[in-house]
Image (cartoon, rainbow, N blue to C red; front, side, top):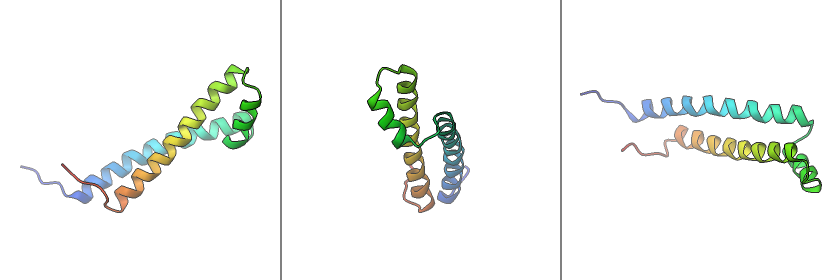
Length: 87
């Protein structure tokens, strides 16, 4: 039987989440470069001009990426602080 300690599990999960976070941050950077503004400013623009479907699609994807970034950062913080259980 192999024994794996809690810190090894945490380290592995942190690395997985960091890799995903890197992908999400790159996606957000692409949206920022494409539209030349922050998500907040782009959101205001899209709400004024809802008929621009490509912009609206970008807005939905960008907003989802921003939310996923926050979730990943929260997970990483919890893992680093040992706030998780191994079943």
